[in-house]
Length: 145
Image (cartoon, rainbow, N blue to C red):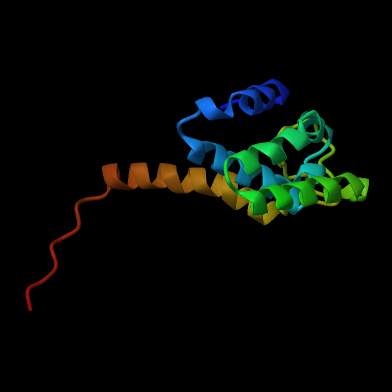
């Protein structure tokens, strides 16, 4: 289910039509999780912008209409706390990726022995295993005791 401003409005207007409220409940729980740990802020501008366009008040009402008033209260609290949270820009995702990304520090570099083993060493071992089986006689069977 796509989750954007239009979908939220449609669900709010026609909540009685939905027969499977469990899917909505899972989606609401996911929404709460995105905000509880401030993950939405750490993800950077692209995901934060997408989530800031949500109709948060309607999301709270959907939780209430489904019969989960505690979830509605927690969602409202999480939305409010997220709007006032301040995260240092250095901790946010500076890329335009929609998901988390590993950004190594400028001082990061693989050491030569590690690089050699991971690239050249593995290739040598592979070729050696191919030629070893072609040129060596078969091993004798183990002796009987």
